[in-house]
Length: 470
Image (cartoon, rainbow, N blue to C red; front, side, top):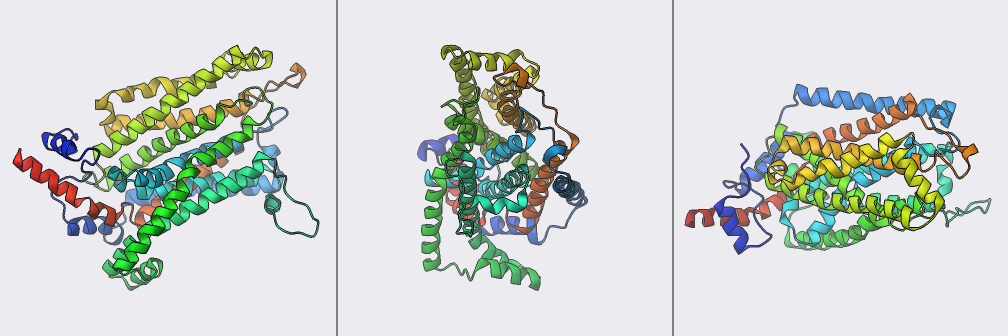
C-alpha cells in the first residue's frame, strides 16, 4: 500500500538535503531496480487486459485512417466548418495535442537542468507522450488544408516555379516550430534511452530481442568516455529543448494573436497559451502515470510524492490560466472596443455560452480542490481531476476558435457551428493513435529510466540511516 511522504525520516532528510528528498521507497538495491524495470518488458507475460486495451485503441486508430480516407475522397465539406467558422475541430485538436506534449519537455529538460530528482520516475514516458502527442497534432495541419498531397509547398526549397512560402504567415511559423520541437524531443528521448537499451541488450535471453536492443544501443559499453560524452550530449539537448517549451506554443498562439478577429487579437495569448499547454500536459501525465503505477506495480518507484509534485505544478499553471481568463474579460471592458465587448458578452451569454461556463467550471473551479493535500495524495481523485482538466482545456480551445468566429463583424455573416460525426471520428482516431502507441511503448521500451533510478539509491540509503538514527 502507498504511504504518504510525510514520515519523520523523510522530513529529517529534507532538512539535510533540501529539495532532494528520495523518490524511492526503502529496500531497493541496484539489482532490484534493474530487474524490476527490465522484467516489465522482457519477462512479464502479455495479459488479456493489455491485449483488450490495445485492441480497443488500435480500433480507434483504424477509425482515424478510414475517416481520413473518406476526407480525401469527399473533401473538407464532410466537416462542420462553414462561413464564417472556417476553423473547427481540426485547429482545436491541433492546439490541444501540441499543448499536451509540453509536459514531457518540461519534465525532461527544465527539471533536469534544475536538478530535480523527482523527475526520474516519470520523465521517460512523459518524453514518449510528447512524441506521440506531436504526431497526433501533426495530422491536423496536413488534412485541414484540403490538399495534403501539396503539404510540401509549406517548406522552402528551390523549385522550378520560383514560388516560396509566405514567411509572414504564422501558419508557416507553426511548421518550423512544431517540426523543430518534434526533432529535438525525439533526439532527447532517444539519447536518454541508450544506456537502458544496453541494459536490455545484456539482459535479454531471446536472440531476436538481444539483436534489436543491441542495434538500438549503438555499441554502448558504459565506459567513462561513453558516460562523459553522453552527459555532454544530454545536457546540450536539454538546453536546446528548454526554450522550445516557451517558443512552440507561443508561435501557435500567434495563429490567433496577430489577426484582427475580436477575441484573438490580444497580447496575453503567448504566456496564456504556454501556461495552458503545461496545465493540460501535466494532466495527461497524471492520467497516464496513475494507471501505470497501479497495473504494473511500480508504486515504490512512482511514489505519491511524484503525483503530489505534478499536481502542484498543475495547480500553479491553472492559476495562470485563470488569470488569463480574467484579463480577457478585463481587456474587453477596458479597451472600449465595441467589437471586443460584444465578443465577450457573446461568449458568456450567447448561444454557445454553455462551452464557456463549462470551461470555467472544469479549468478554474474544480481544480481548486488541489489545494487540499489529501486529494493530491489520493490517486483516484487526482485521476478524475486530471480528466476534468483535459476536457476543460479542450473546451478552452473550442471557445477560442469557434465562438470568436461564429458571429462576425456583420450580423449578415453570422452562423452556427455544429461538428459532424466525421469531426468526432478523426478526434477519436487520434486518441486511438496516441494510446495505442503508449501501449506499445510500455511493452517494448523501459518506461522508467533505469540508470537514473539507480543514481537515487544514495538518497534512499541516507533516508534509511536517518530513520534508524531517529
